[in-house]
Structures are given as C-alpha cells and as structure tokens.
Amino acid sequence: MSRKLKFVSAVGARPNFMKVAPLHRIFSKIEAVQHLIVHTGQHYDRNMSKVFFDDLDLPRPDIYLGVGSGSHAEQTARVMIEFEKVLLREKPDLVIVVGDVNSTVACSLAAAKLQVPVAHVEAGLRSFDRAMPEELNRIVTDVLSDYLFVTEDVGVENLAHEGIDPDKVFLVGDVMVDSLVVYREKAKASEVKRIMGVTARSYTLVTLHRPSNVDDEVNLKRILEIFERIEKHGPIIFPIHPRTRKRIEEFGLMAHFQAVKGLLLTDPLGYLDFLNLMMDARLVMTDSGGIQEETFFLNVPCLTLRNSTERPATVSEGTNVLAGLDVDVVCGLTAECYGGKWKRSTIPNFLDGRAAERIAEVLLNSPKLKSAADTIKVEESIR
Ligand code: UD1
View 1 (cartoon, rainbow, N blue to C red):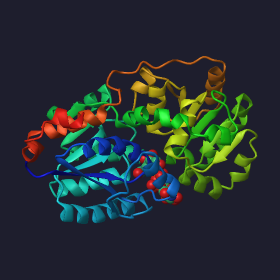
View 2: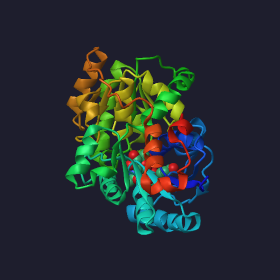
View 3: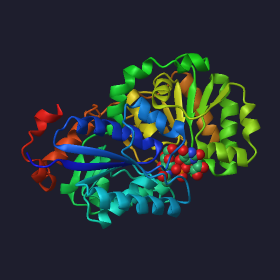
View 4: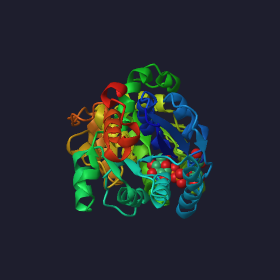
C-alpha cells in the first residue's frame, strides 16, 4: 500500500467544531488517511471550545496554536505565522478549512502560499454584504481553494459568477447537518430545560453576536426593547456570547437586561444543551448563519435579526424570516409565531447527514490526491 495521505483540518472558533467532527469521524475510519486537527485558539474559553470537543466526541486537537483574540489583522496574522510553522513541519497533502471565521482565511492563505492544496467546506455562501468580516473571509478562502464543497445550489451559482473553475466545485450538503443527525437523539437526554425551568414550545431562544448588532449601543437598546415587548409570550433564553456580554457591560446595559422579567440570561451553552433547547423552542431569534441552517433542518421557526443571509434556501424553502432590527416587525412576527402561524421547511435531499461521506469520496477519488492512496477501495473503506 502507498503511504497515508496526511490531511490537516484547521479549526478555531465555536462554529467550526461541529463541522469538523463528522469529517474526523469519517477520516478515522479510512486506513489511507491520517487526519490531524489543528486548533488555532481563536476561541479559548472552556464553554466556547473544550465543551464542544467533549460533546462532539472529538479528540484533543493534535496541535494548539493559542493565538487568542485581537483585531482582525492581528488575529489573522498570528494564525498565519503559527500555522505556516505547522505546514512546514507536517508537510500535509491537504489542508481542510471550514466556514468563514478569521482562522479559515488565515489557514487557507498560509497553505496556498506554500502550495499546499486547500479544501473549503461550506464554500460559495455569500451574503453580498462586504461590511461583514465573514463575507471577506468567504470570498478570499474560495479564491484560494482547490476543492470547494458547497452546501446549497445557490453556492454553485455564486462561485460560477465569480469565475471559479466548476471542476473544483462539489455540491455535497452540509456537514453541520451531519452533526445534527448524529447528535439529535443524544441531545434529547439533556437536562437543560428542567434546569432552566422551561417546557417544550413555550420559550424563545436567542443568540446574538454580530458586530453590526451588538457593537452598537442603539442596536443593543433595540434588542432590549424587543425583549421587554415579547416576554409576555413566554420565557426568553439568551446565552450571551462573550463579545455581546462585553458590549452590554461597556454600555452599562446589563442591569436593564437583568430587569426584564422572563429573560433568562446564561453563559454560552455546550453543543448538546443548545441543540436540546433549539429543537424544542417555540421560536429561535438569531443573527448566526449556522443557526439559520440548523433551524431550517429541524423545522423550528427562526427570526433572523439581519437584513441579509448567506443561506437563502433557509428563507425560500425553510422556516427562516429576515427581520432586520426593526422592533415593531420583530415583535409582530413573534406574536404571529406564538399565535401558531409559521411556514414549514421543505428539506433538500442532500441535507441527509452524509455530507462528510461525499467529501471523503471526492477527495480520495481526486486524481491529485489519489496517487498516494490508489490501493484503497474508497466506497468499502468509508461505509
Ligand atoms: C467569531 C467569528 C464569527 C463567528 C463567531 C462565533 C470572525 C471574524 N468572526 O466572532 O464569524 O460567528 O466567532 O462565535 O472570525 N472572546 C472571549 N472568549 C473566547 C473568544 C472570544 O472572551 O473564547 C471575546 C474576546 O473579547 C474577543 C471577542 O470575544 O475579542 C470576539 O471574539 P472573536 O473570535 O474575535 O470574534 P467573535 O465575535 O467570537
């Protein structure tokens, strides 16, 4: 047998971990592949990182870069400097990056400069809002990538418009949904609802961390007003992201949030507890991209407090509604949801929990990578 292919997956921030877990699971079953996980350390708090490794049965990262927080340039540059050292030492056959965080673009750029092939999982998504740092990260990562794994049809179109070679583009579905499929049952056993004193379908679950929403005092006050006006419908559970907590405290608004009756403030939650709350929510209110997709798949009503989405299928085929931060609109839609009116999802065939499997097939059948693994029967080894 030829030597093993060495794949390095780079992760850094909370939304990366549930995307890499299914890839790790599949690669661990393939003899021909050695899979290393490099954690950049972009997120480092226990409840933003370690708890996800535990919940998702991920092993400790093989390499931890410890870059921490900083401005965009500082963080991106520090990841590049540290990741380049890993590449020079490990000499991987492929670098796999997921999503659109600063670690994603930094690792792709370091790899591409050393001519290490790059696979981007969750390629082609576009919000067409370049004020979002993630949009810049997506565009740059896609330009640099050799394998672009796309979650929905529109991603293929976006990449074609940008002149990306269609031979590099593969519509495979969403690895984040793979994780939902695997962990849905286990999440049901979480005690989180009992601990928080809420019952299924009675509460709104909120996550907010986009700089455009939470770095702006006026917008944070709008969010506060929304909470004050919707708490009459039922409890609001708000696990506060560290960025959001910092801003609420800076603007002196914490006491006002704490004063809202029915608003349950918590620290960020682990994967299984959050999934439990999301599955049984009456309504999810969010500015996260990933949660729009997860609620789409779980058929749970979702109000997105943004004016754009990089996942349009969640709106056209799913439960997602874009509401911006217009307080009257958000409160009106919340009342509709509690009144029992909401659209339902039609889930595309390829959101079936097998995206990681399709990615492995593409990679191991790729002429460029195949030469080192040519004696392996891919279909047999990954099933
Ligand atoms: C990052 C991603 C965003 C993703 C989000 C998920 C970028 C540009 N943004 O945003 O796409 O949706 O993660 O959470 O990559 N902090 C802590 N502890 C931590 C991590 C961060 O306290 O473990 C605080 C620090 O004060 C830091 C701030 O949160 O400055 C922001 O963290 P950062 O990773 O820069 O961006 P996020 O807002 O988390």
